[in-house]
Amino acid sequence: MPLYTYENPKTGETIDVLQSMNEEHSYTDENGVKWKRVYQIPNASIDSQIDPHSSTAFIDATKNKKGTYGDLIDKSKELSEKRAKTYGGSDPIKEKFFKDYSSSRKGAIHPDQKKTYESKRVKVEY
Image 1 (cartoon, helix red, strand yellow):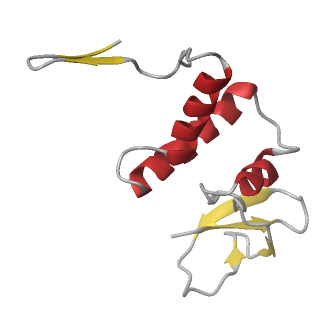
Image 2 (cartoon, helix red, strand yellow):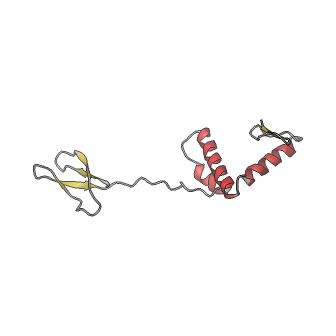
Image 3 (spheres, one colour):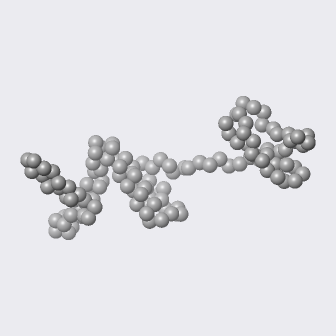
């Protein structure tokens, strides 16, 4: 059940009252004073759903926002995981980035890229 805020017209004191959506939204205290209802802006997040395949959607959702560089990296990682889930385990944008990184640096691999060695008996990621 949602909370509704009421204000005492004489003292300015506010109170939150738990009421059903189907109830009449009014509040009268024990002294018979009818309090007026205070309307508030609902808390909503507009950019909670970002298209993981669109770089412009990511830029639009993160520019001019308060937060740290770490928050930006966390959001980027979250979108990468969504793309990986869509494509069956690997993120094509991340893979392209690693490939471009390696080709522009004479075959060196990115520090975040996992290196693997596989033989008949063992597979090692380092």
